Image (tube, rainbow, N blue to C red; front, side, top):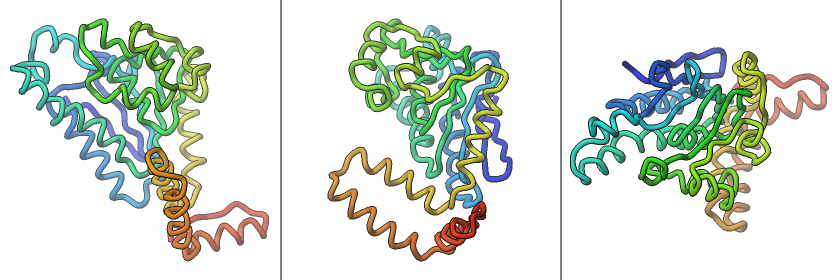
Length: 265
């Protein structure tokens, strides 16, 4: 069964992890390819301005398939070389695809986001949590390490000390604690989660699409470059934006005291 359900409304695409009977466990053969196909299509579609990722059923994602780990099948079967290749050619493709999205990504965390599921959510630019959501990176409890790059992802979201606490203890925190720690930006009632995510996505989607994608790119670049380099990238990118029709539309809308209608030109 394909992992993802993809839908699009106006300028917003929603990716739903659709394996509810297994709490949206990840790592089945083809999961990586599903994400790559969906994210490549989004990046190639100039009409998409924002993406929501959420889970079907009670969980966002319980992470890697523990039953497959126990039975040593699929991604978790074979010798160490086989397992490493399985991570590179399947699980890591999920994460690389999401990280490579050129438009803003909102994680609407509807339930448990554990292990790989938590790290997947943390790759989003923004996270909104249901009051029923829970977060944990419980790899050590299974006698394994964060095999999905989580030690790179989580400290960038909540800081190294809090990330270390979660990794080293295997604790699972509730939505309120996740909000206190900055893992999510807001907590909402479960039955309003998708509406809240869609409202945020719609607000973002009103922004000029070229400038929106370039702003995300600059945010990402800013993680690993010097301030001088960031200024140089900003100058060159800004020069291009000044020559767009959307820039003129933004100025006109401001002066005319109306809402701008950006066309992506």
